Figure 1 (cartoon, rainbow, N blue to C red):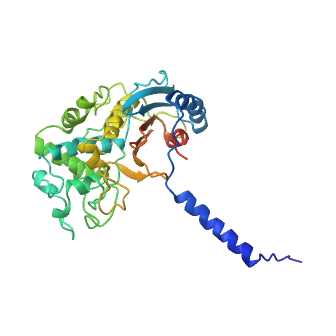
Figure 2: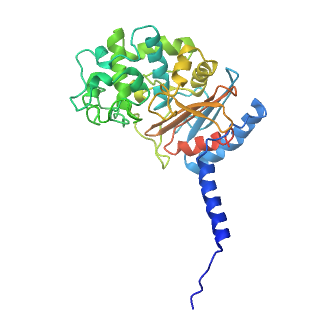
Figure 3: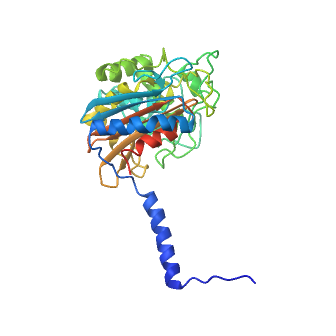
Length: 358
């Protein structure tokens, strides 16, 4: 005989409230957990990362900590490639964290009047035009490109094998990288749609407006002022990326430098994070949530509030064989950079983030 269970109404109501409460609690923003000290956080990272690398089959990671606007600690774990141990200054692909660095350079150009944030972007792309669509291309602006509200397609790029020629920025926009033409697919300004293609449009506009290669623009506007001496787009001496089994992957290359082609080190990105932490007109503009993003994205940065009300600025990156993340807490005076050379690197990054977020 099958036994039927009856739950009293009051108990059922309690269970429902608890379930709804649990969902609400999980959906709340995280709270920042201030480290007791730099040395205490370093000890926790030292204890956490090696075990996490083993558990998730990631060869190596480098980590940097910023406190009160200064890089105060760096660490490295595991292997850069099959023969070389990871070092704090090992160069790695940082994938979409490139967008944050690129946005800083582009906002500086806007501040100088070279590339306005709110003018139609096609004024600055030479003879290149977005493919015809039912949407008004004049509504596509640099501000909307940097905030992913321009309605463009192509969320990301797979990279090109080492033996494949790297196309020009314009050729990439026309589909030479194998992901199709960059075009408008949603009403510009109507919502948030992540688009690496939009950053490639911004890259072309910057190159056209200045007459300089994008790598030179970023060097002048960001890398040199921030003393990021081991950062750039040539990626010389870079570590090796690895797939989910731990096997090395080809050294993929990118025409789309602004979207995902930057290589850097944890200390260099920590110096960049310190720039964001210290504020100033560019960092302020980047950290203001853009319209149509529900307060969640500025210019090249995810913008959130922690559960205790502090600002949280972050971006992550994902190329084949690489995972990266920067986390900046300007009101609390801390920032964290984690770079990994494996497809499961986000699991390692999550383990490190739990040391400062709850």
